[in-house]
Structure formats: C-alpha cells, structure tokens
Amino acid sequence: MKTNKFDLSDHRKKQLSEYAEFIADEYFKNTLVDPHRLAEIYGITSSFGDYGNAFDGMLEYDNGQFHVYLNSNKFKHKYTPRGRFTMAHELGHFLIDEHRNALEEGLAPSHPSFIDFSSDNEVELEADYFAASLLLPTSRLIKDINRRKFTFNLIEELTAKYQTSITATLLKFAAVGNHPIMIVCSVNSVIKWFKYSSDFPFKYIETRPGFKVPVNTCAGQYFYENRTKYQESEIVFAEDWFRLNYDQDYGRQFFEHCIYADAYNFVLSVIWEK
Ligand SMILES: [Zn+2]
Image 1: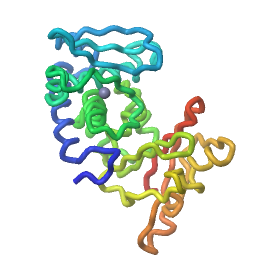
Image 2: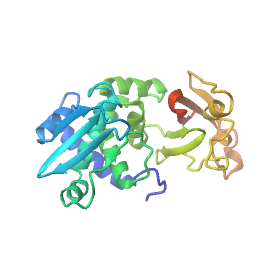
Image 3: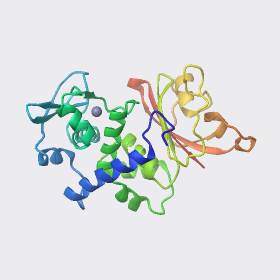
Image 4: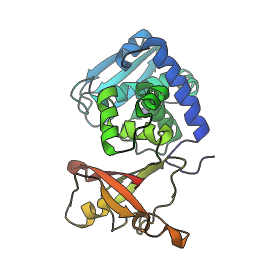
C-alpha cells in the first residue's frame, strides 16, 4: 500500500529493483555498473553540454532515435556520482516500458529531469528508484551490509564502493537495508520530502505550520539557530521529530545525522533508532 506521496509502493519498488538488477547482472556481473556504457549498448546517443539551469538530464525521442542530454552545468564530468545517477535515471525512462512507450507515441513530451529527489511525480519517482537500483543492486547491497550495524559510515562506505550519491544510497538502503531509517529533505526550513523504511516506527513528522522542520532537531538548529551544524550523528528524542500516539514512545532515543548544502539552504537528515 502506498502511504507516503513522496514514495512508491513497496510492490512497485520490488518490481523496479528486480528489473534493474537483472540488467545490472546481465552486463556488469562482477563489476561496477557503468550507465554510460549501458546507454551505448542500447544504441542511445548522448551529449554533455552546458544547458544552463534547465535540467540535470533529459531523454529525447526523435525520428526513431533516443538521445540523452547531460547538463555539464550540474556536474563536472559524466563519471561523478551525480553524472552516473543522471544517466541511470534517463535509462529508467528508456527501459521502463510505460515511460518509453509514452515517449515513442508522443503522449509525453521529452521531460526534463532534475536529480534532487524532490519530486512527488510518479514517473520521476520510478526513474529515481530504478536508477538507485541499477547502480546499487539489491543483492549486492544486502551482501555488503550483512551483519553490519547501521552507522552513517556504512552509507559512506557504500557510496564510495558504488560511486553513488549519498541520497541515492540512502534511498536504496531505506527500501532494502537491514535497519529501519527515515530520510528527511528540507530546504529553507520547509520539508520537501521524506522517505522511510516500511518498518520504521513512526510515519508522521510533527511539523510546524507550513510543513516546517520541528525546532528541537539537528535540522531545526540549522534553520532556526544560525546554521548550527553537527559533523557527527546526534541524539534526538522521538517527540522532537515525530507525532506520537502512545505515552511510552516519549523518550525513545534516535540518532540524527545531517548533510548540509549551504548554497541551497538544504539539509538532509537521516534518522534511526539508537
Ligand atoms: Zn526524469
């Protein structure tokens, strides 16, 4: 069942991840998945140029040919984690039948994609999850985290190994990892989206009016207390972040680990129970 408008149903995620993993294993069995090579294999041409702020990537269909535009204004080279993710996302639009058919039949215009995971548009969510699953296939992830305790370092380790962004790695971990986590993205103190593992104990954030970040959280300190930042994972209480229904939930301890991007007034919070 779909309970969060910022996420796909578990059923759809499973379908997409199995499909992406099948392709990853078909062409990159024991090696890092290279989405740019994959585009070549499928006969998709691409160009890497400065397209201003228009998009991160865009898949175009014209006269029987698919072409991907990658925006050099958004990443230095194609092989950065963001460049890899952008191509993998566009491949999702090509490889997911419904997306490709809509393009071929002219039902959907070539739509620009922004890789900031902010979308609650189903098509974009599907391409994002497909991309994360192509670059970091489920069974490889499960093997790597087997019997490992969850820490933020584990996410950084996976990020280095699979050349994925922190956000993509967290997205995948939330779906199939061995420890329930919640990810909250906020910009200018407003929550843009959140995603959680299906077994995360709380589903509702106690937001301030206007869907704003709660005050007594690490993210809140950044927005309301002069950009206070924490390098380490900090302890927060259940009542600081979540809407609680039972007395016994007060005082439950969680870790919050934040990643900051000052230029965008952006904070990504990862929250897990201590
Ligand atoms: Zn897209």
